[in-house]
Image (cartoon, rainbow, N blue to C red):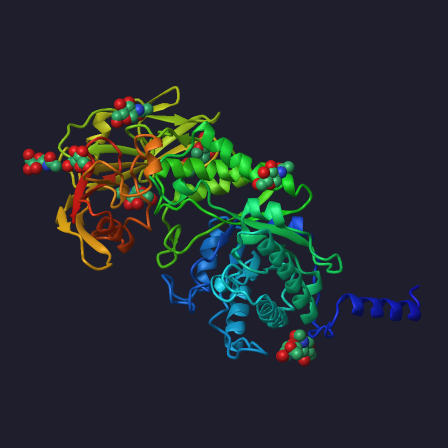
Length: 571
Ligand SMILES: *[C@@H]1O[C@H](CO)[C@@H](O)[C@H](O)[C@H]1NC(C)=O
Ligand SMILES: *[C@@H]1O[C@H](CO)[C@@H](O)[C@H](O)[C@H]1NC(C)=O
Ligand SMILES: *[C@@H]1O[C@H](CO)[C@@H](O)[C@H](O)[C@H]1NC(C)=O
Ligand SMILES: *[C@@H]1O[C@H](CO)[C@@H](O)[C@H](O)[C@H]1NC(C)=O
Ligand SMILES: *[C@@H]1O[C@H](CO)[C@@H](O)[C@H](O)[C@H]1NC(C)=O
Ligand SMILES: *[C@@H]1O[C@H](CO)[C@@H](O)[C@H](O)[C@H]1NC(C)=O
Ligand SMILES: *[C@@H]1O[C@H](CO)[C@@H](O)[C@H](O)[C@H]1NC(C)=O
Ligand SMILES: *[C@@H]1O[C@H](CO)[C@@H](O)[C@H](O)[C@H]1NC(C)=O
């Protein structure tokens, strides 16, 4: 039996520990079923991010997504996800500054309602403070740490109060990708983890038992490994570490012509990264709260191979994963369609421990790039048999279907070893030498286990530019070059070379393989829309500053000789 004097001593000791602690504010009705952090992350695996939505700057609806509707979470549920990370930007929802830093109650209610949409569908959820790390919480730009700490405490106290009575399927994450480049920044993040814990514990309710996913600088694996320090033991919250993984940068973000992935070296380096974080935190539950290889930026076969290997490797190191989806990448929320259903199927089956068969594809950045995710046929060429290599990975091939109907093995296609040959007679029912360009059909390949694959039968021709040269604009401006697409409606890579043969930027790419030399970076240095290839102001400025006529060679899929157009900017 616990005596009253012991209780008094215990309370006094706790009060000292939680210096300046307010009494726990909220008392919840109902009950809370405690869950360990390792159970939590495994139950939310695999997870999905509601990206670019409640985290939009400045308000929900301001970016590419309208305000979220509950049916989106039905789509996520049907796709097989178990958890949802809910990124929330608070920076533009304060109604007062110091000393109160009051958060708009309407916004708190909105966040609470969206959490209910998620948890009522049986998901586990992580809610956070998101792009505040771009503004008032940027430790590399703001110098008044005391102010950041005060505001951060008050913000989490209010969030903690509002969400205090949410069930144990709701976890909190203190701050998304807070910038940090030094050990001092890392130490400040450790301090912020503790301030966050104190704030939610002070708010009370069920928070003292709630799972949290703590962070290191940038939610970067190596920086977290280097600088993360465990939180103060006085906080009893079950905790995991969350980090993010977008590697290798060049493949994930389509930089420097890196449109291939899947070599032994690519795989070894991914595995070493995941293993290193696990190696530093052997007994701590880990969750990769963001990762992706978007259909917007990556080649299809390479992406499927990445999805499979990434998910299996994370599982091997007992690390849960949460896919980043900005609303333009994976789920088309308006139509409820997945933009790359195969990638989703690979994710789900790999997470369930099944073996996936995968398309073969070039992995070495040599002079052409093959991909067994496609039958690429060039306009005006005769239709022939097409042989595509696969990696069955121990599964057996079971069927090929077109629009739900089985194709005839032997007649429409044949299988030899791990190669599937689509017959000329079959392909001729789908395309002729003069069919329109673009995707004409998808054949579904089914195997004894794992995800079904698709082979996209695609007619292509070299796209044409509306204009092929212009004088560099005198002022800093984006340049829109009209294009008529003719196959896959996007560039694969862009090469930029000055008329003296030197590279416009990133001279070091001369040491890369042929498909990568002199290539510039997607987003920063090239982009596109439905009607144009876009050269952003930054790259136009480089040409003006470089003072030399510069040819941009825009390359398309398939990356074979000749599937390029040139655009020259003259000075
Ligand atoms: C305590 O919690 C209630 C909601 O349960 C909230 O309205 C109130 O503002 C909180 N008090 C403080 C001091 O934060
Ligand atoms: C608990 O229930 C009481 C009585 O129904 C209600 O007044 C109070 O607001 C509830 N508290 C919380 C935190 O929901
Ligand atoms: C810890 O992380 C660092 C940085 O990523 C890495 O170099 C090191 O190998 C890791 N340690 C272990 C034991 O995995
Ligand atoms: C890759 O493509 C090249 C030319 O585009 C071709 O010669 C080669 O046979 C292809 N390899 C495979 C494995 O498909
Ligand atoms: C394809 O053939 C047609 C008819 O011969 C011709 O007009 C057209 O220019 C050709 N297109 C290409 C891209 O070769
Ligand atoms: C084939 O699948 C791709 C990817 O899902 C899609 O973009 C394309 O429109 C499909 N093609 C046809 C003819 O349905
Ligand atoms: C794929 O084939 C397997 C047997 O090999 C079968 O069990 C499964 O239902 C098939 N899946 C589809 C989508 O046809
Ligand atoms: C594009 O320009 C490069 C020089 O940068 C040249 O070598 C190449 O032949 C040109 N290609 C086409 C299709 O005009």
